[in-house]
Image (tube, rainbow, N blue to C red):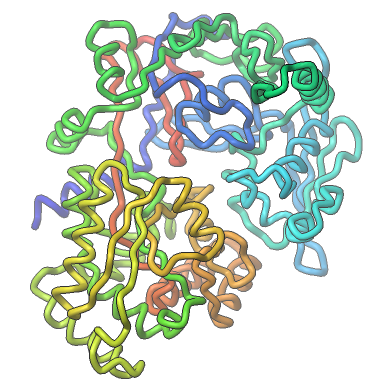
Length: 560
């Protein structure tokens, strides 16, 4: 047990760690660097990119209002990006106005970066017609709900006072807005004129095509022709093989990273390992299971917690699960240790909804600060089963079999079936409850969650920002991300208090109270959290990993 606790503590430290030693100096004058972070680009439209590999490419091509850099002591700090200065003003109605003054900067075609480029990008992200998986990043912005309801993007309170002044009005204080929203790939600026030209050209090609035209290519399809405002520009692309970036001549800021940055593609972790072993890449961001296991056993510093938790989501709108006592009974008897073991060596039984690695009070980790909320001690399983049976009896189910046969949907990939079986066995053993596990495709599960055509569903709960509030706000009764249709007025009140609270002990206390209430009410049953890892060849340093998953090589270089 002591070794496990020590390993856990090391993982918590690693989750906050970025390899951020200073590189060689100069403006993009470091050595060439070749890396592998995944497969060929699937989506380089910022509002749709969700894969780590795609987001990593984007943070090198574009610059947001703010950026994260190494703080010199193993952590990260947020510094100015496209914004030269930032100011805030609290308004009488509880909203907060953020004003960004942009520095003089150019796109790679020489045109000035303007505040309107951010307005266009953010309106495009919020537009329900675009169905972006990252749209809820802007849910803290005033007018977002109205945009989602009406489709009128002009209602989003993001405006350009002039070419160099961007004004954003938020619904509350949301101090993490600067560190998480203003550094995310999804909120990076885009050129409306260029996207409209590309879209018009694609539509024209489609109209001239044969009776069954092929799907129009995305606007970013011509990678070597991309107009960007970040530290790098695309200089070469070999389909399915490699993407080469060169330090941008128009980038306003100096950086110590490589002049040439090459992304080599690997569709599997094993293929990536082959590239690394052959010396074709010096950094590998996707590792085979055996390599990750070795890092875990070695308690490596190149391990970090994923900003997500695998959980069972309950459909609170269905008759059987409308009673919180039934949901709580299922949560109590879910065997998280067995589920984590079935998921593999990188999975660890969840102790709460918020995973390790999320900031808490001061230097504390939120999970450490809040303690254990879910009992995973195998010696307590009989007691938990007895408590669960008592809850079911209170809810009118003297025999768990009176609940009928429930169905658990899961994505039939990887270890999904093994995890599902562990859950089904646990509920059968503890309660005598029959639950049928049914494997479906990822698309089928997403559809069931969106349409509410499920009873129990296994899914990943991932936050778009590294703050506990980002995990909790999606369970508000009026949130479209609330897939289980959980509704509790006390919980909504807590969210409202948190939104208006200053950073500090009071806010943190409310965050912990909200998490505890959510679990007590059985809105979801967290199962396990995961670690990930990477490899950097000896002789290099300066690689940073954002807690949300992507990597930055703009400060990478050879060690002295």
